[in-house]
Amino acid sequence: MTIFKNIESLGPLEGKRVLVRADLNVPMAMNDEGERIVTDDTRIQSVTPTIKFLAEKGARVIVLSHFGRPLGIRNID
Image 1: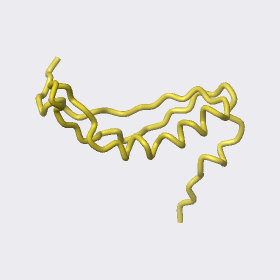
Image 2 (image 1 turned 45 degrees about the vertical axis):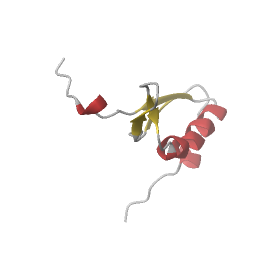
Image 3 (image 1 turned 60 degrees about the vertical axis):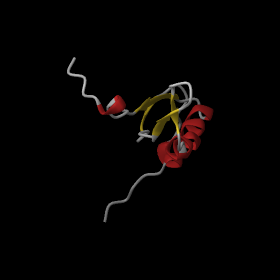
Image 4 (image 1 turned 135 degrees about the vertical axis):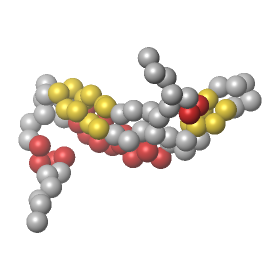
């Protein structure tokens, strides 16, 4: 059986870089002005306590994520 470490068991974090891999693919829609807006920020809200905890412990937090293809268009560049 695998034992997973939790965030509180990381030890001292002061000045350390901590990489947080987060799934931040959120649903988007166009508003009346033609701007894309987030329609459900649940995923963003769920990772916020982790980021705040790490920052309060003095960690240098790096959030790593990706956001799918904008408008479903593949950019080959």
